[in-house]
Image (cartoon, rainbow, N blue to C red):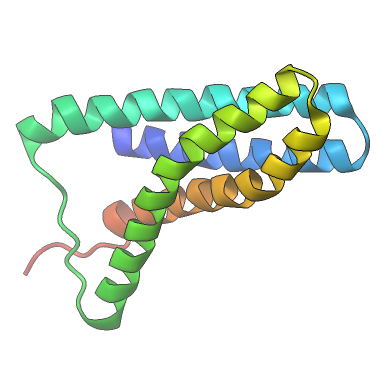
Length: 143
């Protein structure tokens, strides 16, 4: 398995864990919710480590993968990529703060932060998979 594929799988797993965590808390299963959200944090941390290794150690050796599509598809890809990168950077402190509040029993504050953090984190997880598909699966070779 290549690192980009691993990263996409980790992003997908994070998204699934987030949705399961949301379902658990809506069903008032707090312990299950906590375990799922901690798992989402662990998977996202593994993603971040793999992503940084890939971009710091592998890409300098093999080069970047270029997106070859043109027109509106290229514009859409770069808009998605830009929003993904910006929000991925934002989700790190958001997720850590949200988890910190829960860990310290500040559940009203946790719930307020989670309402902001959750959709951003889910968006980053889903678009992470889409970026992989667009760049490595749906991207035709250079002409």
